[in-house]
Length: 471
Image (tube, rainbow, N blue to C red):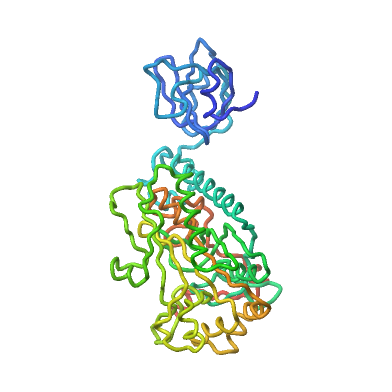
């Protein structure tokens, strides 16, 4: 007999069906035993009556919470006064005729039917596969899937193609600390895990692909916070032959469509999205990702805004210059000459545009430098010598020398965007297997030591930090 999803059972009143899932709760009322059975699609009340099947009724006596069972029985209407209008199957129940225990379960370390917010985070992360049984988290992951699919379909319809980029790449100064991977075949040399697909997607534009996107993994060895993890997901895209307005217009349409189609309960405060210069945002809100909601008590109010006209450079603690966003952005056209001549550096504005939502930066991008001369000047301003620029970025400079189109793009923090849309306070609530606040994976026990033989293969010697401290 074919298994039915629980959500489908209400369509089969009077029929014998088979369902399978986890026991959420077991209740006994006199001779009757009730089980609430759940699968991914919903919950179904199942009743065991001795007169219907004595053997099944006897088996039900030993069934406990979170056991995995398979039930066969007739779908019947509930009495009118017993209808539960809160759930999709609330008008029916199953009169069980056969039961098979597929898997018994130990008592879980926490209740998986609650929100989970009352449970210690470390316990939740250690038993994440149980934590993910929560309806709230399953809903979050389902909405994550729907959002990713919607974006893929939207961008495909706009002429974009999805292309994967390497996970083993080169360490270059992009703003955050790299995760590095030792090379076994090239002793003493290292790969870096990508902080973003930034350089690769610009090379796609040089290749003539014109419109690229990717739901990409990005890895950065930086301090972990509620809205930041070592690894996160980006909606990443790049477009050729565009100006700032082209990129912003397409992305505004995409975000509005995502909200209206997947989150219809949400209200966007203002369309088109308001625009603030960096200077205006800082003066009025003291933030470059301002929360401009008119009613901050409304959980379904979405106040998007673009922040533009960022300074290209800012002073370092040592008195030099560094970029405010990334080194690949172009100066606004009226400041292009200043960039090339390396003058009025503190006044140069960039083509960067950030998208803020309710006080959270959910996306950012820019029109890029597409000539080797302009890119070189950025690194010269930052204090890099010609030899170092060639060593770190010769692949970009060489590529641009073969005819690069003007291009620009954007990358969204997919986890941040989803967390905000789902009214979650941490991106950990929308990531299947996140790290803890201090970057550990308690479920897999990572990071962990590796065998001495592995270290030897990689030509690495690890100093014991405790012994070094004593010395």
